[in-house]
Image (cartoon, rainbow, N blue to C red; front, side, top):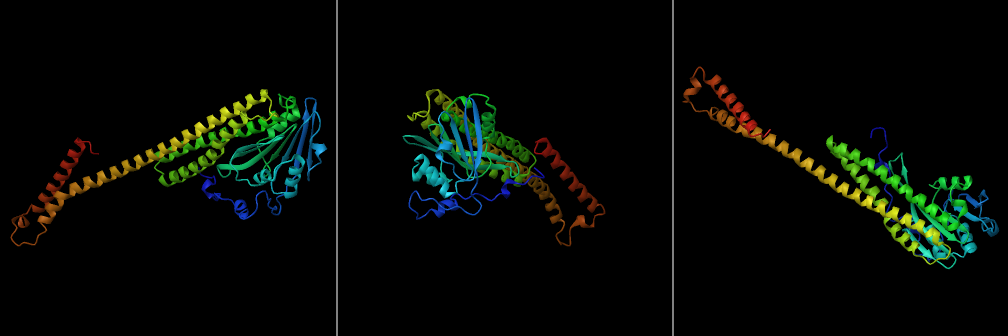
Length: 364
């Protein structure tokens, strides 16, 4: 643990974001203007079984560039702050203003909204921050329609690089399938990274067990606090995603083929597994807290036992020294030549006898 920055150093993310607070009093469907430096470029993949094209744009390309007959288009937007861009997407794909508001409001819980010609999906992408030793979470929104997928991220950087490489190399089924399979692949990549988060959290349980055994109480309490916080973040991403995937499997939207629905069922099974592992980790935290409490009580019990034995030993000794410490003039033992060494011998005998007795009773 030494040499690593503690995850407690990271400022706690507020439950209610500043973005949500800025929306107070505004009509529904109103988009907030971006802050300085928030507008990012767009990336576009157009592909089919025979080839692909990859481009980067600074502004929204025209509809003919995105929607080409016989191809699947994936437009990835690494910012949700560009209001003209969001409005252009809304106009191009007939997206309801409330959906655009949900895209920009990154505090949405995972959900699905179904329309006649497209589906809106919202979920959390989680990555493990090695520097802070904590989870980084951001919202990803998908618009899935006939021959296109538009993905929205909060910031640059994602878990989709393997998808891009599969498009470039043409390996697997990705370039042979439609937009629905691309949406599955993106969602599957996000869920797969949940298990990397679970693995990282699992390793921290070993650290916490060592802290208990090494009696490093303060460090253990800090670690357990961080672990509980990260599990809450994971739980908030996984639990509603299960309901979203269940609805997605049963959707009547014609853009998702029957052959692709079984893949969404596979993601659903993975999410159930991740949720079960999260519950197991929560039980492990409770067990560790109970074990730590038991260790603390045992330590205090041992301390009290030692102090009690010391007090018990000194009771007869205090009686002896108190007896001969009285200032009476006529005490025969005070004038005896061997009185002092005899008292010392009696004291030593009492101490040794009591220690042997305690040892016989296995009190220490």
